[in-house]
Image (cartoon, rainbow, N blue to C red; front, top):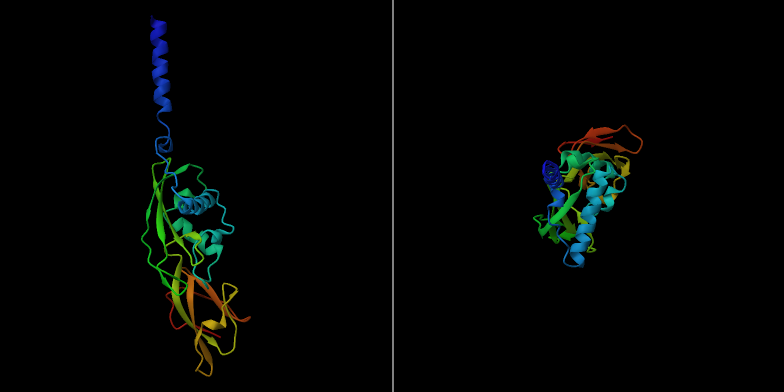
Amino acid sequence: MKKLLGIAMLIVLAIGVTGCGGSSSDTEEYVPQNKQEQQEKKVADRFLNKIKKEDYEDLKSCVYLPDGALITDADIKWLIPRSDYGDLIGNKMQVVLTEIGDGNVTLNEDDNIDPSCFTLKYIGENEAEYDVTVIQDKKNDWYVYLDGLYSTDFTCYVKKGAILYLNDMEVPMDYITDDEDKDYDEYTIPYVPNREFKLRADKGEEIAVTPNSSDVTIE
């Protein structure tokens, strides 16, 4: 009798242990209902997996950027630890999609005005929630939207005729908004990193600025 009682207790303990796993085993996974939702989930999953694996190469391929944005993978990598996804960096835990609903991003860009926008809700094994917002570009492709990645309409003054570089990327001369001054051209760069970046003219010295810097002049 004691032997049977002991076996019964072991069974109860085993059931209790298997029932104490992460929330992913108890969470009902949302299944995309159509091709569009499948595309949204595909890009969101890819983005989250890159963060979990610390794979920052080609992050731009799954993150939304306006046409002409002078943003690099390094800028996106810089933002991730400062976002709601920071605790996913290098974390192998499973995250489960639980819902797809309407997003709340309003854009008024020349190349993408009021795009379709949805929010995908994920839950991790640690019961933390992760919202991934995706928006559609003008080619109807889906990308993850990262709030705070870029700032708009940065103005600076560059010595007349010089080529301007931002973090070693050539700034198009199309961004010259005023060339009436005999010594300097005024540039208005539509999208710059929302962090410190470097500017230089031709082979001149670099200067470090932020999106909030004013009266920036590059010789």
